[in-house]
Image (cartoon, rainbow, N blue to C red; front, side, top):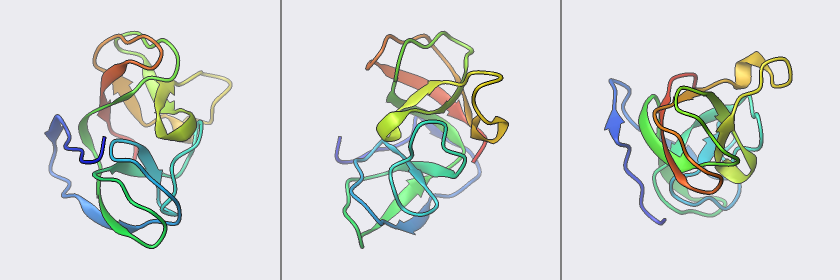
Length: 121
């Protein structure tokens, strides 16, 4: 996916971030400008477009988004970043509380598209 738009954007306007690595539109990215890893506590938002290190891209923050599920996700599950900028179920007692950034709006199978509400960035 080269271009990405959220399902619904709340009051937060998108912002610009300088990349430190290669990113694909729709992936979760960190404040450092890299693709977010599993249970990252530094998620900035969702990349709006593809880019490589040095590029300035638009990032979407709080709002309703669609991403790639890492593992099966049930509707209502609390979510955190999964590997390679995906989204996965947040696991209480295992994942850091600060890594909980979203809630699933619908169920999804592993690698399927899942709508989610991003709130904790």
